[in-house]
Length: 186
Image (cartoon, rainbow, N blue to C red; front, side, top):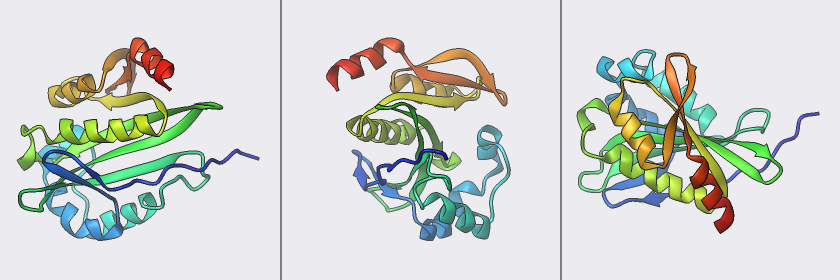
C-alpha cells in the first residue's frame, strides 16, 4: 500500500504588486485570456487551452493533491493590485524525499503581455517564502536553456542549473549551501 500524506493548502498571499489567489475553477474564465497567446507556448509547450480545457485542468488541480495523495499541489493565480487583472500563475508540486524532508518542484507562467515587469520574480519569491515557512527543504525547477527570464527567476530563488536535462529543459536546484542553511534554521 502506498503512503499518503497531508499537505498544506494554498493560502491567499500578497506581494508588493500582486495578490496570489489560490486556484479555483472560476479562474478559467479570466486565465484563458493571458494563456491564449502562441508566443507564451514557445516556452511552456502545448498550445493555448480552451476555457473548458482550463476548467477541467483547474478542477483537478484545485483538489490540492494527486489522486494517490503522494504529491501536494499548490497553485496560485497572480492578480495585479493596480487593476485587478490576472497576469500569470505560480505553482509548487510537493513530494517527500525523506521522513521529515519535503521538496517542491516550482513553476511560473506570466502572460506574454505582462512579461518584463518582474511579476514572475515577485510571485515566485512570495511563494518560496511561504513554502519555506511550511518546512520545504529544497526547490527544483525545469527551465528551457534559452529562457533567460525563467533562469533569472530560478537564480533569484537560490537555484543553480544542474547538468540534468528532461524534455529539453534543464533541471535547476537550490544550492547545497542554501539547503544546509535552511536545515540549520529549521
